[in-house]
Image (cartoon, rainbow, N blue to C red; front, side):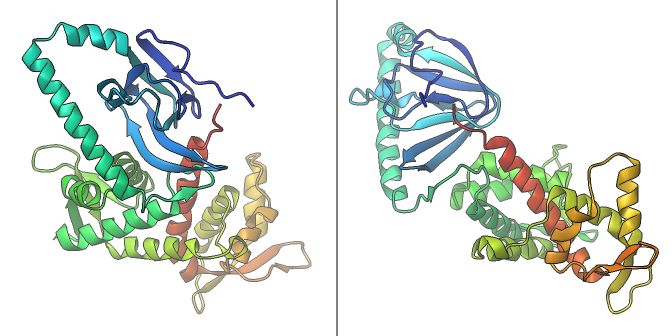
Length: 349
């Protein structure tokens, strides 16, 4: 397959639009322009065999490719860049940049060159340190398993050590979380913010106004929830694929209707008998393509027991209600993470 890039054949300044998975440039391409991300997200990576080494995720407002202009020895791209979502970048050719630099006062040009040289040397030191810690991946996932475990661990740590208990909830300011996550533990800021937003969307944490009237206070009823999530995802990492808890999106929807039915039932020993036929009939009535077969993942996960078919054709099962209530928020969040990864894991063109 021939790989084409958005930046390797055009040298004029202007706006470029990239579809998910489209390459802006490849490692080894001639460096003739710098880019400002106007909209969307780009990932920087280095191809390695059939996989890649992830370097960074950049987003709106960030710049890439500029160091090649200031480093006379850097004539080629040191990494590849590809869009994660629909992205628009402003390309500024080095020719246009040179004209701008030539018009500057000599002292200001010297200042810019000095700062760029210091930044280049700092980047080289950081890369040398990171070479021993950056992981190799066979396929791109925006949220790697290690990212999920690390961010959940940090959230739990920050809520417990830096948060305040107010009116039955723990409150943590986003700036405190970022200081620990980004500055100390080097979590990518774009991933952190998207992860937190996903927790908010899934109603695992809430967001409220801070003293300055900005929506930057994060609230959770019990930080222990985050620890439960962290333990689950960390356990999943070490398990073989056939042993992992897998609940499909259809099975998740089936579980929701089963749990709604269980609300009106009286549990015995933490279990209730639920009517699966009624749930199937509900989906059939609304022409939703979900059947009893889609519920098998819940059975494999021990959310329920064996099916029991009555003479009337009615199918029932014993639902492990306490276990489902504990695990369902984790399952829901796991599937939400998978949907984000699927949306961003477009093939590179």
